[in-house]
Length: 404
Ligand SMILES: Cc1ncc(COP(=O)(O)O)c(C=O)c1O
Image (cartoon, rainbow, N blue to C red; front, side):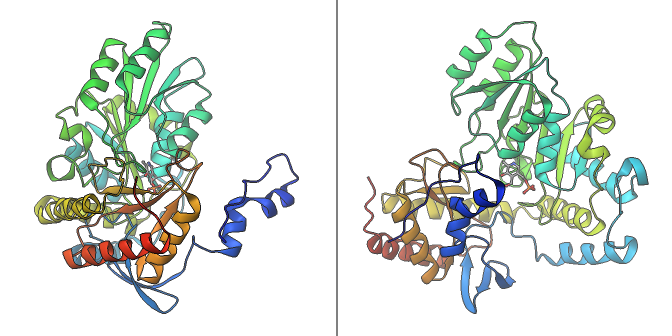
């Protein structure tokens, strides 16, 4: 019988802590994470010699094998080699950094942009470098780990409000000293829930209480707004959003991250952010893949269109089955199971049916929300999604799971 062990006692000596950790035990015995993909052709992958369909990659626009993206990436290596081998402060910016930053800033409707080696670094830097000990950072409880880590590094006071609850945000802001500098931090689209931040209300509250607004738009870039410009563009509130951070690893077929804001904010970050000053710059192939994807997104709207058609199709399948997907209106779709043992059997059965998914369990998600976290891609076909629905029915039966 599958049982989730307790998480490690953090007070134990390090080696013992590792041996008793729940995630380690699970990996040693059941190995549901870090599976080795031996081959990938778009969403068609091979695991342990078995062909499978990828259902959890954040490849929203399906551009990792786009001919123009592949060609640009190869050209970049031919022209620039494989790495800048150092930070931009130490080694200088390269022309490809500037080209990417200028095009991203223009696309997002912001004055300036800074690119970093990961979305995680960009989001962490957005908070840790701007906030200081005398500030208060007011956050939605469901923000991404990178933002939490940024807050911890900043040493600022932290206040949480209930996820997407603007009454809770108002009450929090009202309690604070009006003179204390405030930063409100949210995700544009929440990675686990798929929920969209209510930006009009957020902007209004930030204006009323004079708070600086940071939006992590990793899951909205390429997905929401005109040609995929993200959540601020979706609501027509780009100007009012002080800082947008995001990732290249979802819609931009690369790895890396960006921070977009006005010129003064970006220049301040360049001279104050440890993550920018003390870490190597993004590599030529990563920058080239992101830039080529950005250009493809703008001239081929069919990828975004197909993404949304697929999202609606999958939501229809889940609705018919009565499954709870936490009301996600976006391609980041959680299938909430709640019971960890049943979740494991459902995950395993999906795997046996040839569908690669990932389990997200508490404390990574709120208690009782243990889920299969899925991401729809423009590369999914209707037939793949229908077959996934059939596999889910089999999985639910095997796990004896009935939706509430
Ligand atoms: C909301 C959110 N922020 C930040 C990140 C970090 O982005 P990256 O994977 O590019 O480091 C992620 C990625 O999972 C994310 O979902």
